[in-house]
Image 1 (cartoon, rainbow, N blue to C red):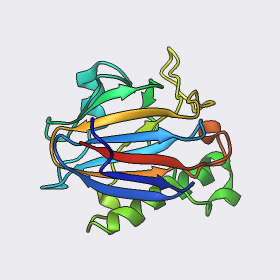
Image 2 (image 1 turned 90 degrees about the vertical axis):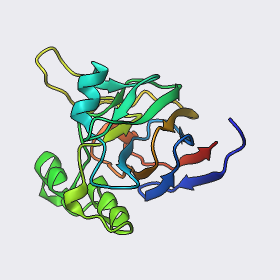
Image 3 (image 1 turned 90 degrees about the horizontal axis):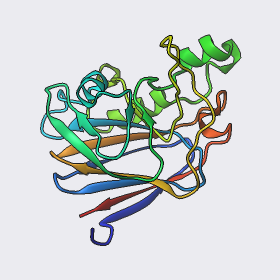
Length: 201
């Protein structure tokens, strides 16, 4: 791959979005380790077509994403392919944190803490989208083991400083990130940190 066409740092707890053309790649780097990155994809030509966690898991045969995984749309198309991954076992079952889920899981006093759903709302509004367009998302670098019973919980992240994942766009995409602000479970080591994003040819 050539030099980055775009290179930026997403501050801790912040949202981000960018259009990615077919054939371009997005590299997401966990700069300090143990930082969950909530991620959504939409078809640029028609955002009504968007990432489908259910179809991605069904077609991929796994509840986790890693090298070679294909991210499938609600219309059954391949949206992106993971072409490099130095961490592995990224979650796509647990969804994103919200003010409401914070209150239920961690107590009413946490309701108004910043959360990924609110980040998504802010960033999607920039593209004419709303809360009805938020779907089950990918959680890069988030460790969510699933027990034989089907129960799962968020535990300490396994990503190390500099771990990265690279996705190649198979169609023109709108990529949306919430650099997760959660401080009540260990997905961020209880200390949210910045991540780096690069667009590569």
